[in-house]
Image (cartoon, rainbow, N blue to C red; front, side, top):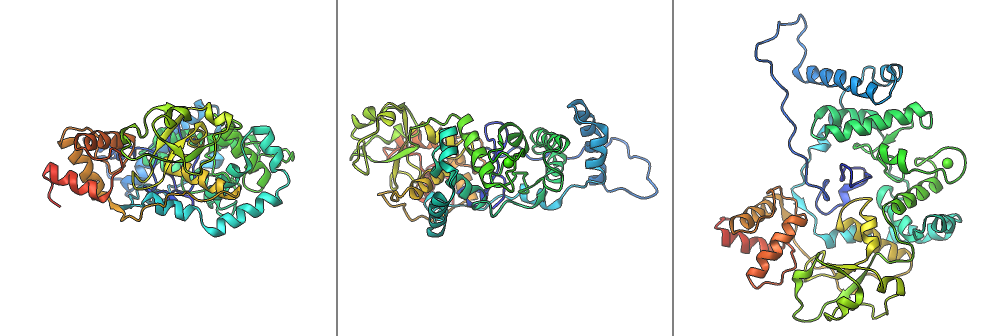
Length: 432
Ligand code: CA
């Protein structure tokens, strides 16, 4: 499970997007298409041995990158050694351009995340790993959240990826679609090697450069990884303790609030105004005044009662509702996706002995890419701008959908179901 799903600055880490409901780039708008290689205005002299255009473009990029890497403080010796003979990895480019045809319904995603096997392993590790309470005390992040991150990112360290991170970043940078990001990560990877902390041979990760048990990209490793077991190395590949502490450090830096929850399932009253979904962040008492109550019937802790919470309906009005507490957003520094944060939180709850949500996940048919894009085109056509018609149902599309639903006197949950797609297409005059 080592695919890309986060990019740029908000998303600090990489991991396993094959479990993500919307495909490999769930949380982000996919970057624009790769620019075409420039063609010279006059044909160049024909060389004795013709060099393919792709190789020329790669060599040009590599020469340019070398100048930028020297300016970033890397030595000529290191660059000569580590980049000698490097070529782009066609497998990386192919995986990077993959567009999933169908988006997995969130209920199916959550069911995939919370398997009985995974819950059993997590509960066993919870008892076995004697250092967990120390990590929890040092960083303020509960052990169950750390175990859930570990489970999701690398199947408790079992699936780390075996790609040469330097070559992966060379491939992504040369390809151009995410050049600035990939060059930054390539420089970070080379600086890790330069530091002597990790060798090139040890610097392994997913095809997108997410490394080790925590699936940290190189810049996150440099800024965030910690040596918890005290052997002098920050070893997120071989040391469980270093990995769990590094994940805790990342979440702490991402704003984790000790003693506060991540979310609570709630039941909404009849006739509820769904348009406040993904809207205001208010304390639980504010929500209770609107008739929202906890699904488990338990009282709020003092810390949660004082925390602003946002209503989320991951599967729309037909599925479970949650009040997302501040730590929901801290989890999203790992991967900026509501579904991912929900998966982590619900898995952590199960590790701690909690129950699944009271309201079942609805059974749904996956939406195709063409349906998702048609819905976006239809929204724009009927006057509710969802942003680019890219098939990614992000916050902008959901907001436009809620506004359109309100205009139609439909429950404004912002959830794109098959029924909503059909209604939108009919209204916009898009034939099936
Ligand atoms: Ca260590």
